[in-house]
Amino acid sequence: MGDDHDVLDALLAGNERHVADLPDDYFAAVQDGQQPDVVSVCCSDSRVPQERMWGVDNPGTVFTPSNIGNQVWDEDDGELIVDGGLLYPIAHAGTDVAAVVGHTGCGAVTAAYNAVTDGDLPGPRGVDKWVAQLIPVIEDGLESDLIDADADEEMVVNQLVEYNVDRQAQFLRNAEEVPDEVDVYGFVYDFQGVYGDDKGRTYLINVNGETDPETIAASIPEKYATATDSLIH
Picture 1 (cartoon, rainbow, N blue to C red):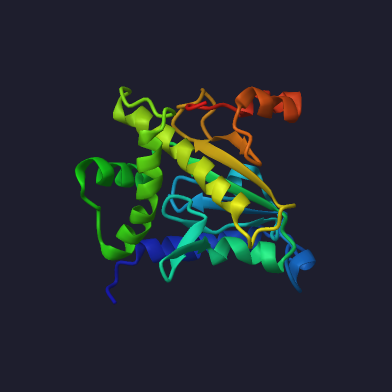
Picture 2: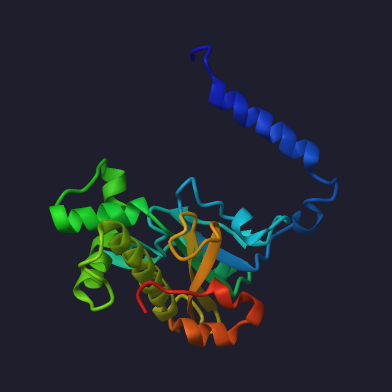
């Protein structure tokens, strides 16, 4: 190893601060197990802070799997199944709420869109697998009447981000492995001001299959009414 370890130094220093800032009883409630309130599957984009977006301070609250394109599925012997990272807390830790969190300007959705329109996957193979799993979603979205094909590419991609969240949420709700009593919510994390001026807001776009913003707004406390919106409905 060379002598230039600036990133490693930053990681070690950051952990030192983390340890120093923790109260003595920080892990007391979760020493012997976990029962997270929600499993939140996000895109593994470095701009999407999985716990901070919810204002979570305590461990054991949010189970946080992530992958390319916030996908709830994985392929097994040619069949799409619920990804184990998402399914584990539902099956084994008593979690009965799942959140699918996409984000504006998603590179995975953009890559799948480019693959559909240009025919090229971005590479390498490990990335291509996850992008390829999004291609049928993108194709269906473009063939639907929900995507404005005449809009600029940025808007098309962001509409497809929302469409993908809806499809992922639908897959979860239809999966035999996910009990009917599990609530499934869909969000888009907006750090680019696409939906409004509040950068960093998670816009609620799907509640157990309901996607109409006005209907969703009527079902949540009035003070959160501006936290639901849609680019495609």
